[in-house]
Length: 268
Ligand SMILES: [Zn+2]
Image (tube, rainbow, N blue to C red):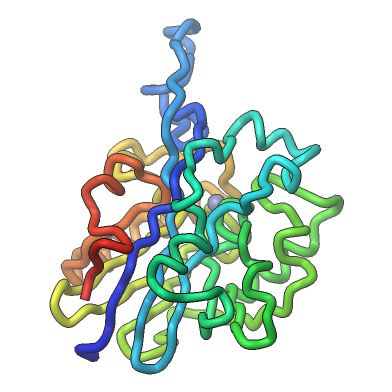
C-alpha cells in the first residue's frame, strides 16, 4: 500500500433501459402468473475509475462513446439502452480534463470487458503512449464472432487497437489487483484497489450490475454463461467477506448518488 494512492470515480451520466435488461428477475418480468407486468424504464449509471498511483496513472473502463447513436447504428442498442442521460461535463474526456488530464496523459487503460458501454471510448487512448489492457480470453473471443456486433460487443470499438492481455488474478501494480469474474462475458474482470485510508474497494463492473443483483441473483439480458456468472458473483462476495471491501457496482445509479465522485472528492 502506498499513501499516494488515490481513486477518483468518474461519474459519466447514465443510459436508459428497461430494468429487466439489468435484472431478468420475475420481480420485473411478466411471468406465467402475471402476463401484464408493466415495464420500468430505469437509469443505468455509467462510470470509469481513475487511479493515481506513484507507479502511473491508470484508467479502469472507458464508458460510452459520444457518437453512440452513429456507432451503434444497425445494432438496435440505441433504442434499447440509449446513452441519453449525460451532459457535456459528464463525458469521459471532460471528467479527465476536470482532474487535469488529457487522454494522452494516461499510462494504462484497463477494460473490464469489451462491451460498448465499457470500451466505447478506448479509441481516445490510441496515442502511442497509453497501454491498453484486457483479459486474453475477452480479446480472443470478442474478435472471433461473425459480423460486426454481437450482444454488447461492437468490433469497431476495439478491433483496430493494440491491446496487451492478462490472465489470472494478478496484482498489476502494488495495491491494484485484477480479478477474473467471467460469466457476463468470456473474459470479464473486476478490480480490487487497496487504499491506505479508505480500505479496499472492489469495482465489479458488469460482474454485478446493481446492488439488487446480489439479492435477486438473476442475470440481465446479456450474459454469456449463467453458471459462470453465478460463480463469479459468489467469488466477489467471498472476496468482500475476506477483505471487508466496499463493492462499487457496474451500473447502479442509486449507489452512484451515495459515492464520492470526481472532481469534487475521491478515495485514498
Ligand atoms: Zn457488459
